[in-house]
Amino acid sequence: MKVQCRSSISHSIFLVLSCCFIMLVFNNASCKYGFKDVAPIPPEVKTFRVNYLTNKAQYVNPQLSPQLTEKLKQKIINTTRLRQTNSDDAHYDISGSVTQYYTSTTGVSGTNATTNRLNVSFHLVFRNTLDEKKNFEADVTTYIDFPATQSLSQAEASNSTKIVSNIVDEIFNKIFSNW
Image (cartoon, rainbow, N blue to C red; front, side):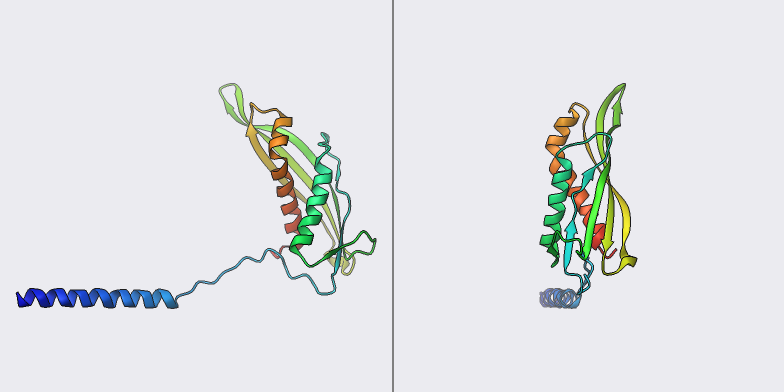
């Protein structure tokens, strides 16, 4: 009986010590990482201007340009310290246009389309009036898949917020991200 009791006590002590060791290891271990969405904006940059973002696509969604323009302004105001201006001497001058807006079939079952895709491309023109070496032009593209049973106008109505948000995020990342 005594041997069995000592074995049980030593087993309990071993478990307690093991638990303490594991807690000590995990308590002192740390893993630090982070994503930096916005690169540091130079201190001399104080203002931005978003010109009206036009729609030059073959098919024109009349609501897209005003929504893109306003949503991009709001994203910059809410995410950076920059102040909006309408002046020609804005430190960051942003313009561009929707260049493609079309649907394509992405899923087929038998002889019927099951999924369509709305493709949207935007041509961005960025001017840094304080450092012309940082001027650039870039194309960003996004898409939304929708059931082939929906018409284009139904897909636009149910996905317009997502389409605008995706394009604005892409534009913002091209301008302000440090990746």
